Length: 146
Image (cartoon, rainbow, N blue to C red; front, side, top):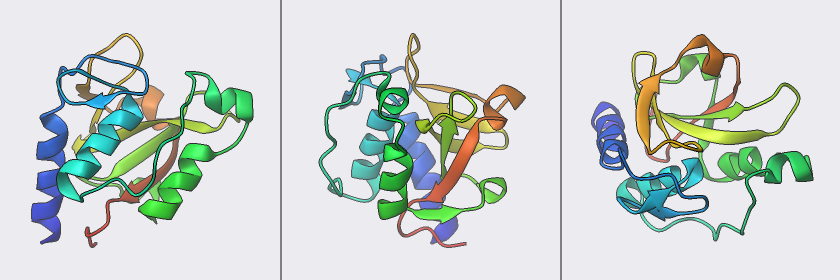
């Protein structure tokens, strides 16, 4: 089931491709930010969201200086070593050295991720060295084993 579930996660994430970037949104085809994409994939493959997401600003992580996203991921997902992330796993990124994790992407293939970020629709891109240097943590969705 693990390999099949991983493929289902990626398939669901790909249905979000070209969804316009919209801060705090999570509506396929209408708008999503990186967290909105992850929330939408969760709803599509796991079910109801595990918690209500409070309002947040684009600079929330820097302003608060707290690991809000990382802590939420640890509550609801299974943390794994970043180097072992595979198809369908979630990666969190620090946009600046020493800053809190505030960006999320889903691994969609060998050196590929699906994510949404300012100025871009949900897209599938290469996991280039620029992104690799910023990986803060990696997680598996509930139900994925190994």
